[in-house]
Image (cartoon, rainbow, N blue to C red; front, top):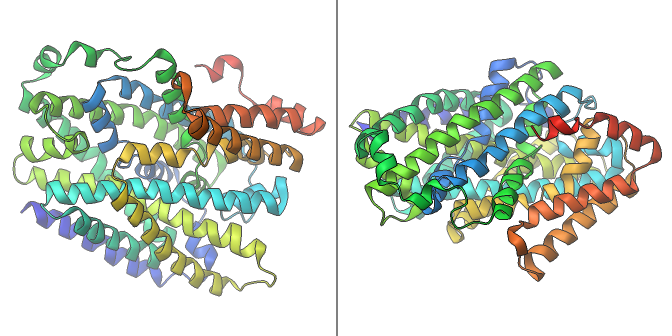
Length: 468
């Protein structure tokens, strides 16, 4: 009975992808679908895209390891998303016809900015995708008793087919279904997990005191650094940019962004609490299996199938967006600008579909070799915010910082991030992502053009808003 829900769900995804493939004629159809989606669709798509394996199973695993401090750190994403919606998306000036992050960057920094963004976009998307694929393999292994590698192959094969065939049309439709499963499945899992361990009183009574300390095994600087890493690590990432480009207007996208940040708060609390329940039920587990353990032990037949499907939906919704962003980024931001001849849109479509498969296989290999979901996420973040995030904010706001500012910001952020991580070993508990972002911001402000200085400063939120 339980596995039937999963089979039906995977079948629906495949059918939808194949059906949508007949509507796609060129790379524009494949990449941005239509710019007419309303508030609920954009909000649901954004939320389903972000709330993946790292934010659900990964959060539960980290809470299982160290306690509630990870929930607090995860709120950095929520704060960042809300501020992005209010201060950046609400003031955005996107170029007409933009298909990807690189095409936005080109208006301010030329081809170098576009190609650099395309390369970083691909690297980030592969890392994020690898984290989701690792989660899929773990879920198939624990929930359906399928070997890890076989679970990776089965689950990701479905994603590969419907995203390659149907592009953003198929992905947006799939994410609507996945969001609805998410908002039903996670509360059910929380209620039954708490019931399994004896209720909220039992959780408080049996949770180690150190687990209720947000600084457990961390210094204040380490917690702040992780909070900032969550805040900027996925800020304006390629999957988010793709969803900005399908909204019908700026106000719709802004409100959807804020709502996706708001809904992430209860999601982090729910998944973290499930991690605590798993620790109370069995403190000898492999932490990455905490959420899956509660599904298998706490839920009755029937409901178990619904929640298993919801968990797979959560992960697959993030994976398909990352996969699409990577292939579109290579085509739109690397191959097209570097090509000496103009490539026809139909040919670019074929290239994008081939790259979808190649990128997917690369990420699948990463997932098999490196199974720690949270570490994969943190590694992926280090190739985005230290290099691209600051110039991207400027470009989205329509402020031309100049090519000198871009080169200084991107190269300085990348170099400082690598030195901090590999040469000095991330001292003081500060992550390389945080340090690289700060250096990137400093260099951008130093080297930006005089006119852009005034414009960029005016577009920044007030100090009180930034720290709220």
